[in-house]
Image: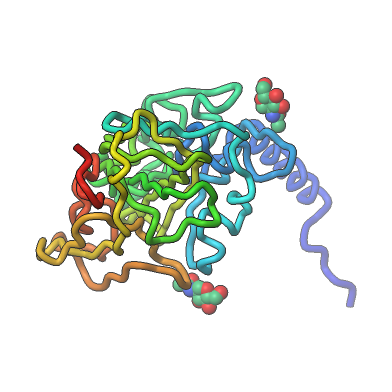
Length: 309
Ligand SMILES: *[C@@H]1O[C@H](CO)[C@@H](O)[C@H](O)[C@H]1NC(C)=O
Ligand SMILES: *[C@@H]1O[C@H](CO)[C@@H](O)[C@H](O)[C@H]1NC(C)=O
């Protein structure tokens, strides 16, 4: 029996045309991912293709799920850890000041692109929705995993006083600033505590985000080469060894005090936090950079060994 063709020739042609139109549109419009930081000193800032300066990259904005420790650590799974910033380019962390970066779903929506489309929000636009909102009220255009600014889980910056990514460990990578209710707008300003000087070759910094619902168990960690500008003079001030954060919404005495690690969660291994059950609002617990995990907003002034004054 001759096999029946799946499509008539006419259908085939329209499928080919539809596919081509789709591919053309796809090539022209910036591909939207989730949210990442776009700033000087970033790894993967031009994408992850050798020799390509991709003005339209969203690789670093992609979440990571269920990966092995070696794969999720600084985005190794998509080689982002192999694409450092240009030599001499650092994210400057102003000691005792403010650090402003751009949060976006694609490089194209930040000043880091040669041909930017800039808006108030992370998708190059001045408004969110009304189309990109799910029945549950979750905003997915842009994909920021929240229903509102108030419910946005929070993001954080951390610093490690080592000059190479290979020497960073969870214990020496210390959260120094937390910004509640982000990601939301493109521009985000983090308050910085007074920090000690980096080694001659600079420090390694990282940004983290764990959304609170509105999608899969997303997890974000991205790397930067960074420098502390106007550091504290005293050579005796050092950041303390970081401890894993602890869920403490229901009992503040359980919170990890002082220097804390980034949140490592939802992966096959290397997680430093486990939660189960529901939070006080009756939603599934998700660790985040907020009071529920013992993170105070703003500059983390309690992360030091020795006095910063
Ligand atoms: C991105 O823009 C810059 C500046 O216009 C250009 O040099 C570079 O080739 C562009 N990248 C691509 C892949 O087109
Ligand atoms: C995580 O990955 C492992 C191995 O690939 C797989 O067996 C497991 O089902 C995955 N778990 C989830 C929750 O996706």
